[in-house]
Image 1 (cartoon, rainbow, N blue to C red):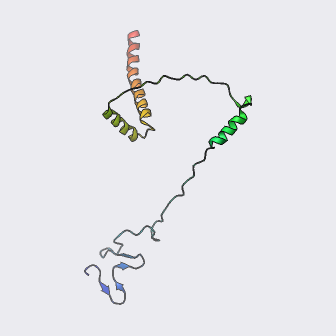
Image 2: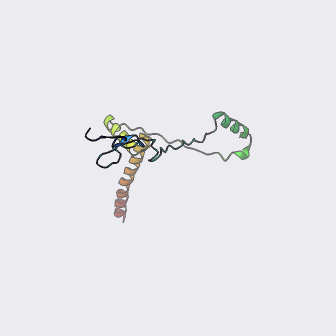
Image 3: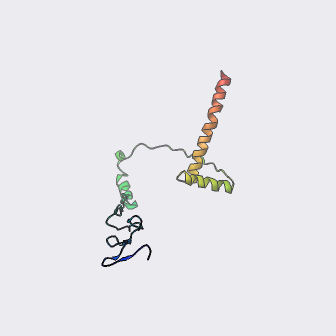
Length: 139
């Protein structure tokens, strides 16, 4: 019992009965950090989880659309939409894995979005010097 000695009438010296933990004999302070529910320290700060707003169900949406289908004032003018032709691109598997890692690193929604953004940036980088050189040749 070198660190903790018994004192007559007081039990074990170096033990904090209030905190329920051993005291450091050199400093007199606690030897270990207090437990999480200790009243002498910070409280546990769990925040209440926020509920996400609920979107209407498919049945409710269907009922609203059906009720407004005969009312022409509820609808705007028709839109003409042209479908863009998708282009496929094949890359080696190792390069795809590296690209997927970088997409996650940049917190992009998906690999396709990240690759599209990177290709767009690279095209803009390449087009700028080309257009500047073209202007110099024209003048």
